[in-house]
Image 1 (cartoon, rainbow over the protein chains, first blue to last red):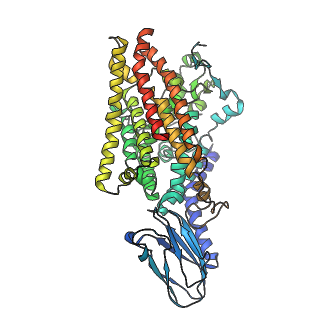
Image 2: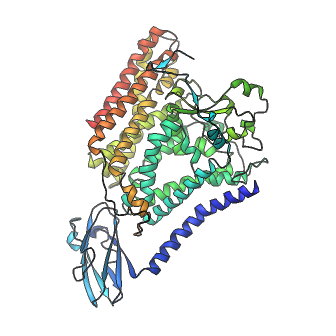
Image 3: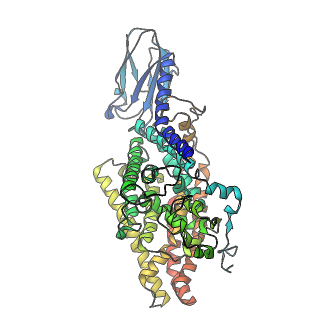
Amino acid sequence: MKRNEFIAVTLMILVTIGTIAAVFSYESYRRRSAEYFFVELIARSPNNGNWYPKELKVPYGKKIKLHIRNIETVSHGFALPDFDTEPSSSEIKAGEVVEVTFVADKRGSFPFMCTAWCSEEHMQMNGKLLVE
Amino acid sequence: MSKDKLFGLVDLDWRFELTKFRPVRALFKSRWFPLLPILFNLFIFVIILLAGFLGGYSAGNYNFGIMIVWILWWVMLMFVLVPVLSRAWCLMCPFPIFGEWAQRGALFGVNMGKLGGLNLKWPKALKNMWIMNVFFLVTTFFSGFFTVRPLATFILLGLIILIAFIMGLIFEKRSFCLYVCPVSGFQGLYSQFATTEIRSKDPQVCKEHKLKTCYLGNEKGYGCPWLLAPFSFRKNTYCGMCLECFKSCPYDNMAFNLRPPGADLLVDDKRGLDEAWKSFIMLGIAMVFFLSMQGPWGVLKDMVRASTLRGYLTFITFHTVLCLLVIPGIFFVFSYLSKVFSGNKEVSLKKLFINFSYTLIPIGLGAWIAFSFGIVLPNGSYILHILSDPFSWGWNLFGTKNVPWTPVFTHSLGYLQGITLLVFYLFSLAYGFRLSKQTFPGLQEAKRGWIPIFTFLTLTTLLFLWLYIG
């Protein structure tokens, strides 16, 4: 009985603390071992706060993976015309997360913008990418 | 065997014992069951809570928490768990595990000593469904948030788990599950329709067994955590299927049976206004949820999502008045008409009102199943996506991350909903007339008294048909 109790408690710890630890460890390992520089970007209509952050900083010469999360219930889009992004432009549906990759092979400041008519203020939904 | 056959096909006393198969009985007697399913669900709910917390205020259609809880779990509950397996969710629910662990001081074994915690008795005046009724109704006030915002789902589930734990420390055994849990009430009500039951096999064996181990416990199992007397179970409503009675019975006299759907509706045991109101509330919520989630009225969606404070308060007021006053009020009028039509002056209006409220269980369950079709068919494909990428971090665990949103069989949605409503309407009629015969002493009185209730059930079904497919 004591052995079974020990197994039960161990399973309990594994499914709770173990799960949380495993999730964060795996994500941390994935980001460390990847060849990409990860950047998080949140898509919001201008009247709800606009892109966050509005200004992205990435290191020159690195492969960049943009992780764009649309937190709203309307579709957004993403385009970074000065770079050869993969995919070249994206529709980001409500609640969706898309990944955009490119090589930061130019220094300077470059605009990025929403490509879907998301609200009356759609034209103001743009931000800046700084490659340093 | 009785001669009363449901739809002329199945004897209402027909039972088929599933635990007569040795592997099933061995499973039910093992202390690993239901502990392992509980631990598995705890694992799933840890991911749900994590996804809810990390998902924050994003739209929830690509969130593991929202999709698993409000699409998969809810639909499983309405399609299979409750109508077929009674309160099987309670069997594997992880919410009370921390409180129960604290009480017992053991996860697996049986602690024969005094249970830990304060072990206070739940107040007698609250030993009913009223708190669950209010808690569930209040929870639905926030439906516009927790079905779309992951953080709201996190807060709701976190609160339930926290309350379950705190109550486990204060009150005896499963007082939380019995009297507070918002999910427990409607499962209890609708489990009366379930096609399975836990009952004692031979009442004589229980009668001769003076030491009621199913109630008091022994070294094999705890005394009923749901504070019931398993040897005298007559209906499913309050049995959480924890299976302790299978373990503690030295005569293997507990059975898990298949039975005709709805058999409990005719059991006149602990019927009361609390259960009656539960059925009104569930019917009202089914209507309001359909209107706000699946109906074409955008203005209602804005109200439920609290686009404006005024709109939101209007929604809460309308929703509360509909569930607590309008539906019960209309039903009261029809119950009164039933009494008038019957010509009987002996049967009290209260008894009539309560007894006939059980006719709403099949059509209520049918309305919820029909509503659930409207959730799972358009949105079920999201589940494939979120299984591979539960935290929206770009994972692709099972290679299904890029499965696009694909509604399935939505062209047949109206037919499925309509057929479901009609099938459950027939069950309501079948049991309704039997309830009428049970309520009125004479057959002619029962026939006359049945007419207004038949009319109410028909009008309610027509209303739902109009809402869903009209």
